[in-house]
Amino acid sequence: MGNFHETLGINDFKSKNTIWKALLAEFLANVLLSFFGCASCVSYSGKAHGFVMIAFTFGLVIFVLVQTLGHVSGGHINPAVTVGMMSAGNISLLKGILYIIVQCLGSLVGSAVLKALTPEDLHKSGLGNTGLTKDISPVQGFGVEFFLGFILILVIFGVCDPNRPEAKPAAALAIGMAVAVGHLAAVDMTGASMNPARSFGSALIASDWTNHWVYWVGPILGAVAAALIYKHAFSAPNLGPVKIIERYTTVADEKELKRLDSGRRDDNMP
Image (cartoon, rainbow, N blue to C red; front, side):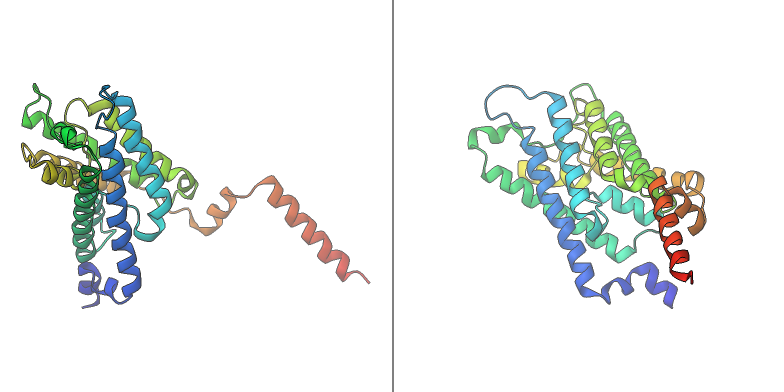
């Protein structure tokens, strides 16, 4: 019975403050992602925005959000990430479902705020809604989004591996750069969603659901594939507490230990 509760996620609700803080963090993160990210796709001056600016806007906003809110909810900010975590057993079923719901609601709110703050004559631009380029078929778009989800989750699992403590300080930056890389490579092909919730919010606000399934099925299947491959093939071995401590020992630490040891010997002298 205990294992069933753990898998389903019943135990997550015993600490109500923790789960609600996590859900609020995921909601707010998606509000900010959709607002700032999609705003970079709208040209207010009439000058076309370059793909580099869009890519780095999405990458940087993910970087700052993971850095700021990652300790509260894990910094998923993406249903594909959540499903990838669920497939690897890193998050319970109920908690994962609630994460996806608030992620989509947050994206909707962020896109709605962007629409409210954008001049009406610019609404026809789609306000950052993702869509396939003219010569890209839905199957090709699915393949592109599959690999965008794949690389994102592969990076997340790599830098958040509990047996790689040296990777944690740069984790948020690496995740943000993975998002930027995906946009640099594919924003002109599919819009480089990588995030079903981000596409959901902008599609609902723009009332355009053309090939919308691509932005759910592609990233999610890519995420699941990457999560399972990393978990079963690439997970770092458990080094044990002694080896982890040794990895972080510095020259300054050694000098301080010697000084303290010397002080103890002097105190014990008659």
